Amino acid sequence: MKKIWKLCAFLPALFMMGVIFSFSAQTGTQSGSLSHDISVRVVETKGRFFHQELEKKEIEKQADEIEFYIRKAAHMTEYAVLTLLVAFGFYVNGFRRKCWLMVGFIFCVLYAATDEFHQSFVGGRGPSVRDVGIDSLGVLIATILLDAGQKLVKLLKGRRHT
Image (cartoon, rainbow, N blue to C red; front, side, top):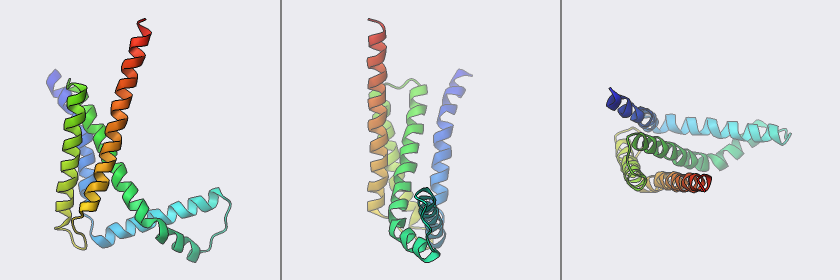
């Protein structure tokens, strides 16, 4: 029974993989529309924050200027989250730190590559080596943060016992 609970630690990662898969299953038009809508909201929020009265035409112009960066930040973020969730599953199941960092990194990068391959079957989408690189950058950042966090915890535990 305990083993089943440990395997359940991977459920959040599986859920995130499903979320990533569903975003990749959107057609080019659907994906572009979602990115544009988010970019418009970012510009509108920035305008409210800085007390700017922006006309619709200016909002659209600024949204178009940042849309590429919003899309790529979303790629990095979703893969950083996936990395954290995969690492959590390995950690709960008793893997050594270096092992779960390395295996988690490799697994998430491979998932990014297969996800891009999946996009080659979706209308208006295609695989992109650049996107695999951007996804992998999110994986790398999360891995570095996990490693630094683990080292910090170890250091703090050591100081508490002296």
